[in-house]
Amino acid sequence: MLNVKVAQLPPEDLEAIRAFEKTLGGNVCLLAVEKSEALYVLEAKLAPNRWQRVDRVYPEIDDLRAFYDRHQDAHSAKAALKGYLNSSGARQLTKRPIRIRLSIPIIDD
Image (cartoon, rainbow, N blue to C red):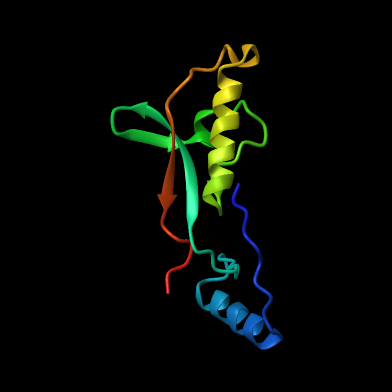
């Protein structure tokens, strides 16, 4: 779903994360990822002022991603999705307006 890179941490930082996980009750797993400057999401319109991620609106489409690190990648995915929805192979799917939205960065400073 989300294309993130796992952060490379020294052993002492990993041990600190594991210790913090234990203080949270043992049923929480923390994951360290590299920061991303921006995150773009593809959304489909369900109703007036109601948008949903495309991977949830079209679960029938295999390997459909909703999040992208680069605007150009999101734009290319939007064009490909619109082309597929207009094709004869997707007649059973409801065509909906698609937008690219700049989402909040993964990690704030």
